[in-house]
Image (cartoon, helix red, strand yellow):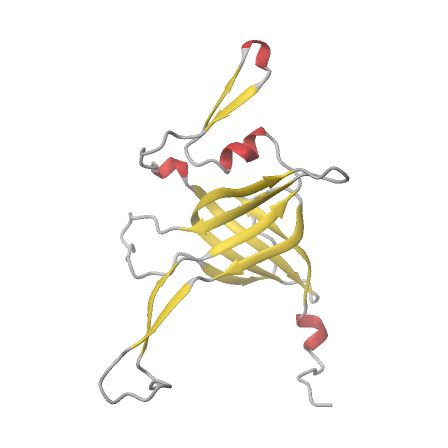
Length: 187
């Protein structure tokens, strides 16, 4: 049977559930793994007389909208507030309950409403790590579902964003990197 297995295949397998890090701290237990979509938008240059299959070298990357999606089963007040861009947390008298108030509609998000240093880290069998890094990201809760015979689940999406500042800023830059590293993220 034809296959691509070779002597190094076993050491390069990606193993385990992966972990989401926010600013070097682990972010909650996930269920069902982490999904990365680079959100690459490709366009083939159209011209008269072009065949239906296109021409090598005439494809253009028009943009990116990369996402990390996960279902988490562990959340606290701080994590919930991070998933509501621009939210405020206040405490009632005596500190209970804590109220997370989402940002008002029609209010632009401020730089501080975006997360910094979001990473999905996946271990390889050889002890190295693949790290998908979003220097800046917008986090949202897509759904929150209770389970009568199990844990509640929150489906979340992190969408990479460009920070419009600094000498290296470019509207055409990809807002993420993929890192191959010897270790999990550290300072």
